[in-house]
Structure formats: C-alpha cells, structure tokens
Image (cartoon, rainbow, N blue to C red; front, side):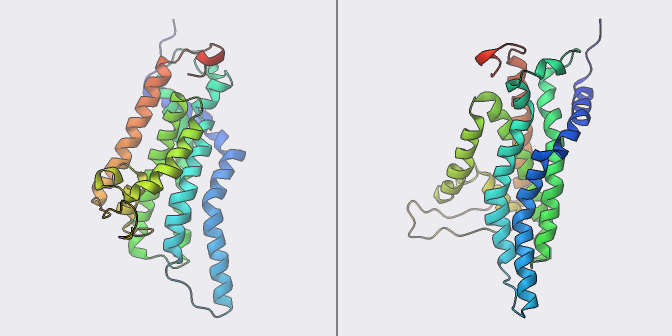
Length: 261
C-alpha cells in the first residue's frame, strides 16, 4: 500500500507541477492588469516631459490607490482564483490529482502558490514602475508590502469563496466593488474589516478622505503598519486553511451539484 505523502510534500509537488499553467493566457492577463495602468501612466509621463510639461506629483498616488488597489488587485483575484482548485472541481479533473493517496486539504494552497508568486512579482514590478512617475521613495517599501500581502489575502479569500459558493466570482465581485468602497464611511470597526483599510495603513497614504457632509461619514482610522501586515497575512492563512477544510469535506469524483461543492 502506497503511503500518503506529507502535506508539505503535496503542496510542493502540486505547486511545481502547476507552475507552467500560470505562463499561459490567464497568467498574462494578470500581468496586463498590473502593467496596463502603470504603462499608460509612464507613457503619459514621458509625453508630458517631452513637451516640457511638469509632472503631476499626485499621479503615482492616484494610480496606486485608484488603479492598482481598488480596481486591478480585486480583478486579479477574481481572474486567478477560479483557475486553481475550483477549475478542477468543475472540469471533474480533481480525482486525477488524487490517484495516489494525498491530503486533499493541502491542494488549494498548492495550486494557489504559483498564482500568488506570479501575481506578486508583477505587483512589485508595477510598484517600482510607479516610482518613475514620481512616487515617493519613502513610501515604496510600504506600497510593495501592501500590494503583496493584500494579494495573498484576496487570492485566498476568492479561493475559499469559490469552494463555498457555486457563483463565487459573483459574490467576490460584490464584496470587492460594493462592500469595500462603501464601508469607508462606516464606524472604525467596520473599516478594519476591509482590505482597503489595511492597504492604506501599510502604504502610508489614502486614496481620498471622507467629507463631513457625506451620509454616515465617520473619521477614518489608521492601524499600525505591523498590525495591518499581520492582519492581511493571518486572514490569508485562515482562508487557505478553510479552503482546505472545505475541499476535504467535498465529495470527489461525483457528478452534478455534489461535485461542485
């Protein structure tokens, strides 16, 4: 009888075997999501300099918060997460991964790590590219940490949501594009239940301030950067663990709704 490999062995083997998938079409879509706003900003910046115009010092800040954080990072998670373990469930290919005994709960993280590494590399490159537009060098380390740790948490969350709900992408989109923007005007406790709050705390800057005349306007609070980083990393680890637990409880190899979790 073949002995089951350890969870670490399963994660490492799954990640190594799945890595070539991120170099296909979906992986390059992720890269384009990061580099499109950064590249466009660099193009506009270059043209402006050639015409003798002064660069806008707030351009890098705007692209970071409004482009990367609020738009591209959530879309990256919505694009990448279904390509992991959710895709194997829908295409009935997950049993092929379990031909040999293996801990099923380790598979979501094993398939998610290549996407995390690929996306993190492009996010770091995008943050570095914003420096050419006039980004504050003092804020660069915090911006990189904010993007990478938020990517870890958002990818893990979407992996979990995709295993819990049949229309996980829809629920994820509602969370990212409705809850995250609206909660800024809510009390501090609710503010801390968003990625945006912790990203802004880590990055040392905000996209916008809530005005006193806004409905339910609340003072925006800031969490210490170390605690914000810990919160994002811990939340991501919790989501990966819950995704593994959910997959472990999901019947493998069945048809219809049972196989869809």
